[in-house]
Length: 523
Image 1 (cartoon, rainbow, N blue to C red):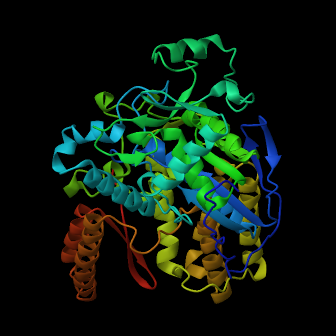
Image 2: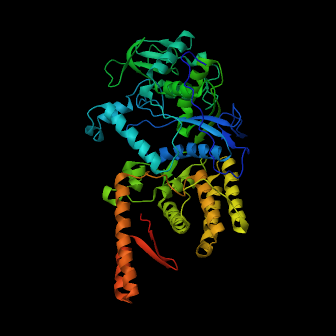
Image 3: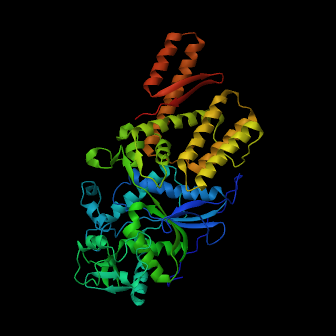
């Protein structure tokens, strides 16, 4: 364990929920080995993993969340097979330079640049901006039903660890100081390039890094660990003067602070393979002399309607652009329909997010809500699958679990969900008490695995929740009035009320148990 040690965090205890299948293989594609492997955890039955979070200079978009959802599915799948999980995902609130994705060490800190933007005018300082967008990230996280991580460290709150790591790298001869900052010496780590394939002999990458030249750097490929800058809006004092850390060092320092020198799995978007994750490996293994992460999982890019997301094209969506109520300028989409859409494509394949797919998933969510409205959603942990119907549902769940443990095959898992939904709807009005309990168990198990059946309580935008409460009240009043009109055989008035409900975006279904209603998804 390197000098300043790590905080001991126990993995969350295994749930008391009745599991159907435990301790099966969990296979995943490892970018490092370029093959699908069965995950072998360092500590049996306990997965430690780190996933790179966003730089909080604006709202996270659906492309960001596709990567975050992949990490969430790793967590859910590991728990479903009975593993404990210690999961850390960071918030970058300083240090990510505008040129970090291409070369070090020039460019401007993205946080400082955001403060000068039109949106940034609303904030008194960069600290307030960082705090605001960090809070909005967590709101969106909960809205899309992502499980809370074990710990969510922030770069600005772990400066001591980062400074200490840089000093150790210097002491070990892996880093050096110039008048502009401190750099990691790539030639001091012979394995540099093992993850991305960008080796020291790669002339193309050499050319890219030569775009930015620091005459004091020993090699143009060396990357920044610390930037000297006593005028930066966010700065700390270090042995090398006032400044701020490089983007890459923060993740190494925070991952080891909470997970130890060696972690099982590291995840992120494909854009992070190089340089970010390559640099993480180099500096982490140079610090400890141990393998940093055994498995590396990367999510492919997302497009919208076949094109790269762009505000100029009008196809750039944040989570709240889609789920916020129309009164707040959003589209009022069910958040779990958005999540379901992000699951529609396999994480290792480029994904095309389309309105057509989103509309289809709104319909799938409506069918699930129709079931929940009849059987309810479980409020306790007692789950069982009795009888022929229960056995069939259990088989469907196992099919989804098999798919998820086979490299997170979400399309197959969703197909199982849709198949089970269709089977339940076919006899929804005639379910026995045992079948209702089996249905509740199935809904809960599928939600634990995929997170698209039921959102955690309170995970809604305040305005969206208020709009939902107002709608429920209005519909309730109209349904009572409609029922009275039907009792009085005032059919014209009953039809007028139905039309009013339709205008509210509500569909009414008359059943033997009384009138049921559901909100019609809008796009």
